[in-house]
Length: 400
Image 1 (spheres, rainbow, N blue to C red):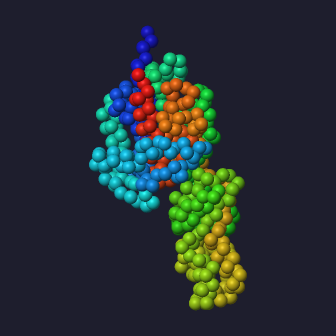
Image 2: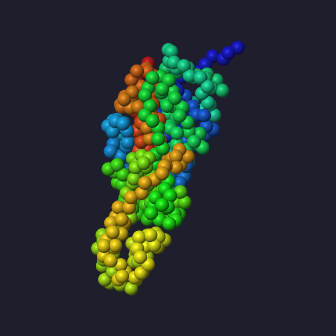
Image 3: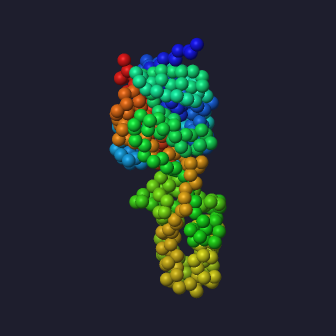
């Protein structure tokens, strides 16, 4: 005999940051909530974020720090549930935290504290949290009906919160995108974002990769610039500034590196030619660059002689290159190394206030599943909290 499905007011698919926030919000407003995840634990990305300390938000969240086909879409949610609201929640649970750089807030201890906080809030709202549940069938008639290997469930509302395609080894899939397409919602092509970029030594203008060398730089592409550290790897370039610009870069395009943002490189080199005429170029360059990079650039760009013997035009040419070193990456390192997904469920088909699908009653999409992608530094978590809260509020208000 077939067992009757369990009935809920809302089913939230995906127990990550957005799903947890949506579930606890609706639950605490009196709705019967089922939170499902195919993984065996909740908050997997939360637990690994920020080196295990969870960069849970940013003090400077603003709509212009998010990418989307509609740059204004995120404005309402970010305004209605702000970084200050989430910080207040963290403080209420007495989780110690600190600002690292550029407004990035991290737990003093483990990211487990944030997951525990969200689960405690879910428990307060009576949320039924179940892991290890893979959806095998989904239908929509008078409400939604889901079948999993552990039973069937029905609800008037369904929330897509399973994220995007980044970090597949953690179980990331395109499930939310597939469901959205099934119900007639458009999906902006998903692309890896906040991801290292590949480049050969030739493309870097060097004889060998300088794996492990790190320095502060300004990285620019498509009219956007970031001043943070970059890291040379055995595959190309990484580091915060590279991850940031990767969201704007597209295959075939070049990125520009200012390797000495604190210096007038032309004035510096010409002055050193006068004050240190016998010095080797690599020694002079090492005053403003890491030693290995200084040596590599000297070998690639300057004659093997003392500073006094190098023509001014050669020095000024190198100076210009240091300020705008163009690199054309071959590709990104793809989904396995991407921190987030660019693209996703098209915002044209969603309400910016409620996250509800415009033409599918009871269907909602939140977090990384949606075509809203933040900068590195806690912005994507804030989008998860804000969009999840808005959907939870809307569900609690609209269901009868």
